[in-house]
Image 1: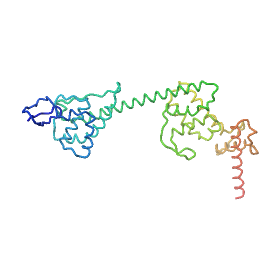
Image 2: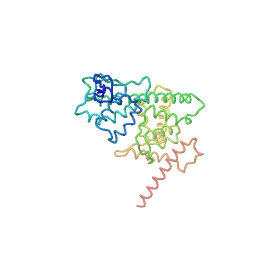
Image 3: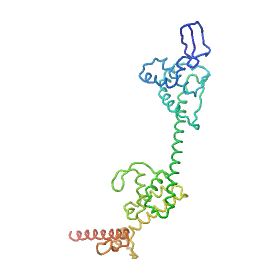
Length: 330
């Protein structure tokens, strides 16, 4: 009967036939010759506790060896803590190997580790697994970043062609501009309630604001503070040197001017405030004073914007007059 000391696990085992002792690392336990694809099949047995403590140990060392990222300069040395180390790191090792062995990209590299006299007790193995896993996450994150940049470049190129087309009205590519800006300026994605009470996300709401900035009758439905917040975010997070950014800032700043112009007094008259007079109340009165005397008609105005502004003033005047009549009655 042959007696063999496994050069990886340090376990002594026997096999039939021929009386020989191989104790200098000449060979290994047969488990270490099994391909990784076959080793995977034993993981459910570990999960269901069908393996013995020694089986678990052998399986763990075999998985380490299968990574081809561990150099065994000496066998692993079992201590009283080895079983605990194996049990607490088996799952992480299994899933980490499953991720790293599937990547064959030339730019993906992970560090190699050595089983030596200083590391053979496996006390550092959890840090090895963490390092491999972090290398994987960094690589995947880098791929996503490259993919994002490539996607943004494609969108920016297509958007540039549309912006440079003088025959194409900006309304036609408003949504494309908003979508490009959402990615380029990294709009927040938290959930919120818009000014109409609808549940949405910040990025969706800001994209709708950009789209509405292309139409002066649509932007007046947006609270000024929301548009100002969008502009400030874009100024802080968007490179203003591109044609896309220039067009965006021109659009949203014009939208702000339109919004402020709609709710402005719009009258050359002024009033002198007495001590204690409220500025907001005085401005409200100026809006009422500048309102048309009869209900405005669309045909009387050159644009929808002018008509809506006049209609807003007229409705405000009627509302205030009704309140005043009720006050007189009371």
